[in-house]
Image 1 (cartoon, one colour):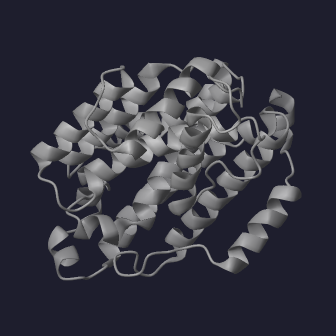
Image 2: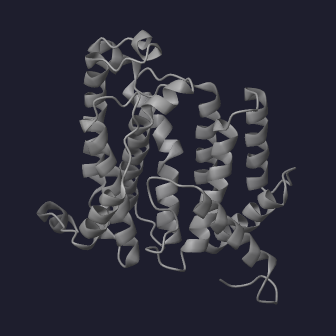
Image 3: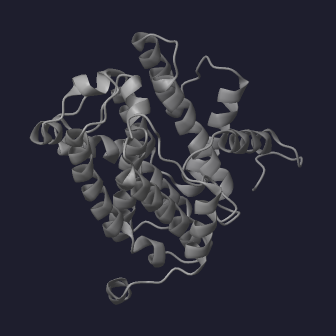
Length: 300
């Protein structure tokens, strides 16, 4: 990392260290700025994560009114555009690091604005009518992160972007199905109304804590679509060089394994599927022994 001013312990160094601490404090299903990433990428990825993590907390954490949540997100947007905000020192450090990462790696500000638009939608939208509406949300809540990772790695290729979008959308959807019960208790339901209606699923059963065969049928439909997206994005895990491909493989495998657990679960409403230490060992092994499918080799 190049200092903006003399001294090994510059304010910019401190800002990046703060973002790395934010990334380490929050457990996610999928690796964030892990040791698999090339070292040169980790500071920028941590800054991106810290920006998104705080904004997501504005939309999700209990306490503030919806009006206050939107005000906080508007302030975060203003900071992104260079307007001084009213947060604490940690917020200042996040934007010091993020500003450097944006300029250093030529990151499109529009991708960060897309993330913020999705977080705003979290405040106001609790139900989705169609699969297209859910995909539109994912295109702003998840896909920008994958594209930002590619830009930090030095890739600006529409083909890679499309594959990344498929993986990121699949990961976001998998998180929805994994957190079905958590989201329901927060008043949110991401499984589209038209799929629920076709299966005959009734929200009153969820209110009563019942995971019925109709809800299982509706879940099977969206899990199948999610699996297709994972398959569509899989070639990206062989298309990028170096250590990034191992990070992507581990991410892809982790998401797919959770989706398997969702599919096998007898009750995702009351029991959240999760990865175990045994799963972690399998994922590492499959990451190392990854095989490129013939169709992918022919496209590479």
